[in-house]
Length: 625
Image (cartoon, rainbow, N blue to C red):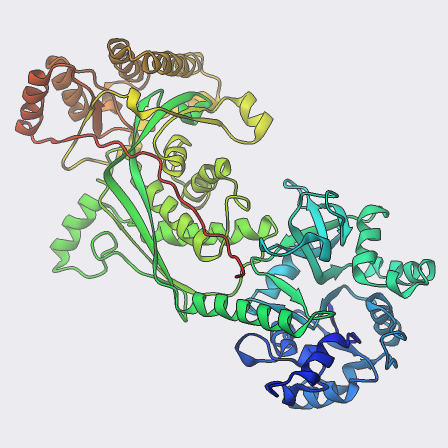
């Protein structure tokens, strides 16, 4: 692949203002071309681009196209920065009126160097926030797509779309469906700005000379106009890739604009480097009704609870570090006997693998969705107090908190990873990376929090790509209790062979899952009418059906004991998840006291459920003062 950097602009406005600036602060920059002006941290703009593309494993050659007026400046820069002087192309122009236009300069290097390879093209006089974006990620994404690639970013609120090239992007394929070069007000609602940062296939390069022969006016020979033609008028597909950073072309801008954007990007860079650790928290959940049908295109109602939680903390660091948890990821033991006891009770897998799998899947997701991530490293650690192996969604809570940390760190918003799709991402981490058998319910409630009705029917998934998730009023709930086994065995066995029977179309399993869904709809109606007696019946029916479907050997003696204890004291009871814990509610206060003592006397842990309402999680939009 070949890289071409365009720095042949003749914009005199900024140059004149620097020369006439009264204080003399910029006297050392008089006559200096825009691409060699200071950027973030004082380095020249072109230095950033050269650092990004100076990699032989990607580019056979890097060419720089300038004009005759500024050629000597770039020749001097090249000798000081180990850039091959012979790769500087001089377009021979000395005035703005005599310019070739950016497309004309691109055509010149194509003809001059007889380029017959794929090309990455950038404008070297662009200011941007973070120069450490991963050019390899850009190239790899381009290689996967059957067409050209255009980089875009989401504009700041203070930027006007009428001054930029604006793109509309298909959210499914990432193909650019429309390109507007400096659109008029009302032409488009998009705030996605394209910049001169493109990848072209070698077979597309012949369109450059054809475009120039059809557009003789120099005003039509800018890349915005060419890309508008390529997207809107040709049959050549152009795809988009988003960079989580802003760009500003230092072309026909004023000194005040240059100072403003330089200060703005410098502040954002500084804030990144000195940012405080960010912590995301995901709470345990209880399946109120319908589970386990969430893994079988059924319906459930689930509640987020504040009793137990997992959290992840991220902070920028020199290297990427995943910190083992001192309790859950032990690497030191008092003795071989100590290792044996801990391994028997806790198993071999702690939370560190969840962090690593989430990071891997997050990078993969962004690459596939056309989101280029900056090269920023971090230290990531986690903590949790969710009891293990009792079906309270401890693993998915760690993954959820880690995902939220990564989204915050890389400035990935709900527009980039839509909220209804986040539960599927979490499930994919567990199932595809770690082979954990699970359903969507846990991940949905940990993303949405509160009390949520969920419909996972096949028809809904086909129609919108995700389930139907509807928040319910938490005031509709009765006061609930939760009890769990102090030292449980692996709850994963609860799934038994039901999944296999489902895939094989077993009629008993199919009918049971349909009944779980019906119980969910009936429970929703009971909640909305505050018919708690009906809700108690439905929760008992849910457990009884599960027991019939899975069998007592799978349900387990301790689980049956907890359910029987609850029912003996006038309470309903069912699993909140896959086993190891039970939930219920008891309308009589005296019965509840006796129930609590009974559970504790038998060695079970008992607690009152503390519902977790949806948290308002806002991300401050960046604004210029």
